[in-house]
Structure formats: C-alpha cells, structure tokens
Length: 217
Image (cartoon, helix red, strand yellow):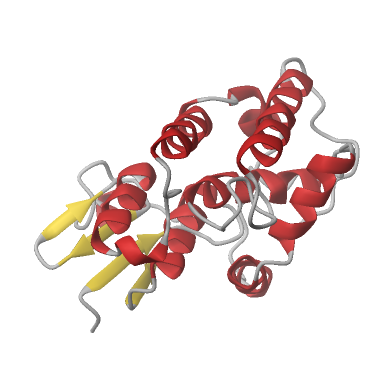
C-alpha cells in the first residue's frame, strides 16, 4: 500500500473529491484510493473511521489525516515543491490562493442549482436566481487571471496548478449544463477539459454504476 491514501466519494458526483484527486496526481506522489458510495445507508459512520467529519475527501499520510480539499492541496504543495502546485512568484501565489479560497467557500447558487454530474447532459437547466451572477464572477476570475498572470501557458497562472484544479469541477458543470461562455473563458474551459488527469477522472465517473437520484436531474 502507498504511504498516501485518498478517501473519496462517487467520482460522478463528488466535486471536492475530484479536487483532492487531481492535486495528488499533479503532485506526482503515489497514492491509493478508497471510494465510498455517498448514497448508501450508514456511509457517514464508515467514513468517520477515516475522516473526523464523516465527509470526503480525506487524505491519510502515515499517521496524519487531512480532511479538507484546500488543506490537502496546501499539504501536497509543501511535500512536493517541485510540482509547481502554486505559482512561483509571491504576488501570483497570493492571487492564486485568493481565487482558490473564493471557490472553496463561495458560489452557493451554482452548487445548489447545477449539481456536479459528469454523466448527464442538461442544457439550459439550472439557471435559477443567483446562478448567472456566480457564472459572471467565475468568468471574471478566469479572464483576469489569464490576462494578468497567464503568460507561459494556457492555464490561469500559465502552468497547471491548484487554481485550475479547484475550478476544474466548475468547468465540468458548465459542460454539463452547456453554459455559454465568451472567447477567453471558453478557450480556458476547453483547455481544462482536455487535460489528461481530468479526462481520466471523467472516464472513471462515466463507468461508475452508482446512481444518486438527488443529483440525476
């Protein structure tokens, strides 16, 4: 067994699990996976054996448990500094941390009305109150980061890192619900959808047999 173990939920529905998994892949460390069907009876109690909150993702490294996706990303950035999970420049890192934190705590309308679901195609759905404001703010973040910090590559801060990882499930939502984007944001979203780690997650999600009726709109 690898020294890192990631406990995660259904790949088709668990966007926070996706972030932790992508961060591990980007860090280059070897890890094992333990998946939980989040719709099963008693699953919270089983998860609590590995995560104090009864929620996923949670990362175990030897005797240490980390149970928050942003904390997992920060830990991996420290453990694998050569992976470039954060931008090299201090100013860029400050902005990168800001946009990750905003994604981590915000955009509640988008989460509620456009649930993460890789297998579905629901064009035009989810445009409830507040969602369009969330979409506009997300696109503003993408455009500002690409214009100001995106030299050297096609990602938000040039090279692929935690900011892209944290917004990857948003790109998936925009793809599921066919959100119309203007040129710069559309180009960035296309870049994310073509990243090999992200396509691998999507393929695994599509192959899952677990179904959560709450999220299969």
